[in-house]
Each structure stands twice: as structure tokens, then as C-alpha cells.
Length: 421
Ligand code: GAL
Image (cartoon, rainbow, N blue to C red; front, side, top):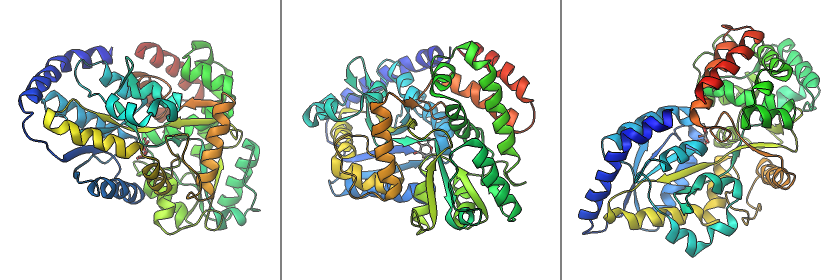
């Protein structure tokens, strides 16, 4: 339903922008205006790698940062910009949101020239192409692959409870209890819907690949309303008992800082969290420990940041294509992702420059992909369209904040997803 509205609202505006674009084709504009939500310390550092790369190629950068992890705020601002007939050159975007824009006639540009020249079809994983291409045309440039089923431990805090990273739910609960007894906040958490949903990805995956797939990808009402979903909500309620009193509204990077500073034991977050640890000068294995959420080693819930390219005026198209080429170059993919915490969006990039967590991320991704255990992240827009994601956010966050019992949350989830379909 939301997609249809978006399509109707934007169709005319986008066509108008197209006509204006053709009329303005006179002189080339070497500037790109880029909308994104990379505003934390680690994210900003990664973005600097991109800005410097483009500047070295004579392309200047107009920054359009919209704070808000997960990108919900950015999406809202983007709609307003496009509706006003003034799209940015490129916008950071996730999964199904890209396809929503692709369904708006004339909204997105075409990157086929860059893709053909550099053979993106052969090197970009199919799981990403699903969102980067529409009707056979490349519409966006994948920057990275993140995944959500990670845990980030403070090494000293983990050592103080025996030093072994938990691999089962029961072991995890014992570790969290031990941290509580040691007087620190066990779980560093920011109370925002997308952060709760990020944890929910991992909790659901830990209850089985079949469960994750049938609930989040197939949206099967039996799985959404079944015993495993009840268990997932019960586990979320248990995790809620390990957060501090001030968790509401906290940004994710401030939760990372609690772990970095040893005020908290662990954060359950995608691997963009690693960017914060690195930015604070911390070293994997020495200061922090990265492991998969208990019971999920071997499977990966992924989200890939992409720069969706808008249908800009003709004078801007050359720099747009040059930006897309830069983003997909093997050198940039290595340099950027080393800093960002993610792994390359192409299969042919060496892991040599990556730290131990990055090497693990690359190996885990390859293993999950070849085992058929690579799944789109529900929390980050790669499992189901955004209307479904939003419905899930509402229920998961209401439950986390005590508005629903686990039993009620299961019922609400079935109803909310049914209504959003
Ligand atoms: C994700 C995005 C990451 C990171 C994170 C927190 O959705 O894929 O790159 O930015 O949000 O802002």
C-alpha cells in the first residue's frame, strides 16, 4: 500500500525532473550531493575515505547527513526532497527501499555504463544484485556488506567472567549474570526501535534457519504466531533485564561507547559497531571480542549499504557514474570497509588489509553464502518490504518497553504483519 502511494506521489515529479535534466545538459557539474546517515565517529571516518577518493578524481562532495541510525530519518527527508523535484545525486539506502524507489517511474538513474565496463555482474554477489538492479538495469552502487548477528564484548569484562565467549543461550545468560554480579551494566543498549529490531534478528536466527526464513522472509503466519516466536519474545524480555535504566532513546554509538569504556559488558549490534571500537583506538582480541550471537555461527543476516543514484540532470550524470565506479573499485572496497566494520560488496577483494574481525566477517559471509545460510536482515530492510519492517519495529519495541506480554506480542505481530502486507 505504501509503495503504491509513493509511486503515485512521485511519478509526476520525477518525470518533471527528467525533462528539466535534459534541458540543463550544457556544462558538466563535477559535484555530487550525497545523502546519508553516517554521522557517528566511526561512520564519519569511513565516509572520509570516500570523500578523499572522489576528491582525488576531481569530484567534489556536498554532504547531506541526516542523523539517525538505521536510516529512518534519512528516508523521510529523502522523500521530501524528491517530491520537491530536487533529488540528491546519490542516497544511502537499504534493500527493499531501493526497490520501492525503482518502482517510481523515472526516479532513479542508470549505472549500466559503469557496471558493464567494470563487470559488476560477475563480482557483486547475487544477494546484493537483487536490490541493486531493476528490470535488468543497475540503479545503485553497493558499498559494503554488514551483518546483524554479532556481539561486541569488552575483553576485560569478558575475562572477569571466565573469558569464554558464550555459544549457547544458557551460556550467554550465565555471562550476563556474571557481569551483573561484577557491578557493570551487562548489556549496552540504545532504546530505539531499529536497535531492538537488530537484536531481534539475531534472537530469531538463533532459533533456527527455518524459523528465520519462514517468519521473516516467507512471512508465514504459522511461524509468526508459533511457539518459536513466543520463545523469541521471551528471550527479548530476558535481555531487557540486563540493560541500564537510561537506555531509552540512546544512540547506538553511545551504547558502543559504554562497552569501549568498560561500563558495560557487551553490545548486540551489526558490525558498524566495530567502526566505533577502531575509532577509539581499540584492537580486536586485545580490547574487544567479536563473536556471532549464540547459536548463529555459520549463518549470516546481512544488510548492504548502497548508494541509490537518482535521475539527476544531464550535467551531473558523468560525476554520478564516476562516483559509482569509485565505490565499486577493489581498492576503495578494501580501504573503506576496513574502517567501516563491514566487508566488501565484491567477491574478489583480498582480506589482507582487514583485522581479525574483518577477516572473520569475510570468511563467515563466504561460508554462509555457499551453505545457503545467508539471509536478508529484517531489521535493516533486506528480508521484507519497509511496510512490514515498520510493523515489526512497532511490536518489538512495544514489547521491549513492557507494553505487551510475550504472548500478546506474538498476536500483535501476526496482526500487524498481516495488515502491512
Ligand atoms: C545501518 C547501516 C550501517 C550503519 C547503521 C547505523 O542501517 O547499514 O551502515 O550506518 O545503520 O547507523
